[in-house]
Image (cartoon, rainbow, N blue to C red):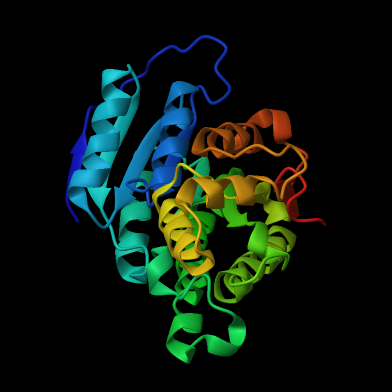
Length: 277
């Protein structure tokens, strides 16, 4: 594990929603993880960023610091339980861990996105299940610290395929459904200790790298342009507008803030109606 830091000093952000909070973000080098990390920092949180690629995580850290925030960057494999435990334990020595967010995930091309279930190989179906493993590993590590503190928020993120409504999303949909179930079960077990667990279910963030990859795959399959595919995707939600990573990030800030202190064991539907509850 390698790390970079701008120091763990205090900084005033006035009435920011996450002032004084310490947030750990896995997959911070990705589109959603990076957007959420930057929003957490903008709202006053001190953020610990990790990912598998040093350059990607380091760039997010630099952007946060340039904007006046507090950030630390490390290379951690979120599928390596021992590495995750050591990383979380190390952070906890310097203060309480208030927020855990994991945005780790495979690329769209790794799991046969766009293929109907009958055409999926076992290997393609299994790939997204690594999301469930990673979410469990990181949530377990954070929960062990949060239970001691008797406080903290674990935020999961899934997508509209958790509620089947489009072709070609069987593999990722099954993984998202499992994560939502994991979230509810963890909330049941952890809530008596003051720890909240919430899932944010999003619709496709069309500016994220994974969704851009998915749009390329689907556009070729349907013989349309990527812009036409994005417009078709947006038409599936009630607002008829493409979702952005900034939409997910802003919703994430609210859910981990004290303004949502009575929310646990629930899936927050942020799909603009694309996936019905």
